Length: 204
Length: 204
Image (cartoon, rainbow over all chains, first blue to last red; front, side, top):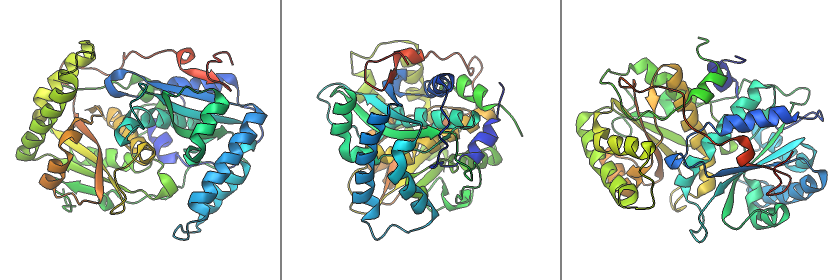
């Protein structure tokens, strides 16, 4: 510590989808999970769980479901532009099992309360973002994905996750492969998405 | 720059719900929005919009809806513990309109695609978390809230937000009032929410 500045972490974040085979130390896993747990959650109830998956057999099975999720959504959708992000995501979909660590972010819910709506995400995705920023600080690449959700029930059965828990994201994590790097991601300018007092009023 | 370290920002984050009346400079608003825009989003589509609300008339109207949302959920629910977080959130609910800036985080959706599900949150709440961390770097307090959703349709009509856009969070922002401070929030230990390869296996 102190490590990277907040500014550099935020502005240098980039989805990393190709990983080296180097093992991720347990200490690093605990550090990114500790960062996740600092995030806000509704009523500070911290209704989250993180399943850290390193077992090869589990990763292979999850990789098959993930690839199926990719195929039935992105790969079969002709409206998705075949740009660099697509090609990178496609590579990940075919190689997920080779990722050193998969982290499954979950929300603990009351039994019988039905599928979580958008706003439930306010109590889990800030924690996921903390996890990814903290990983960057340790030189670890991550990417937030949701393709596993096409086989969520099978995932939960495989890992013994209770019915009352819902999965929110699967985050592959590892040291970036040669040629992968942080920084340089393309984003729109603030003026393209900021509105002042009324929708469409783009001047402050 | 470089400003605060990532580690200190993450570990010092705390919900701030009482604000001074000091104005928030436009430059600061643009900085936190620029940080938001660095977040990941599905396919890097950046389908987000942020409405920055400073007009007193708008804030008063939104404050009434927010208080109503608070009353029908938290205040009327006897299972909510009346702890410090509750009291602080109650104070905010009764004083929202006095907040210097309200930022409404929105998701742009295809028309006719129905209400967003949990996973849509993966493309907006990481940006909200970036915004809140960047605010902390500037000494600005924030808190992520969703009580406005009880009157989402009225909110959208008031602000001229299109049907195809859904609100995800309302983030009050301002310099902390005297007595408010960052840091010291209570969180569970990693061992309480981490599982290794199988649910319930808490030893790495």
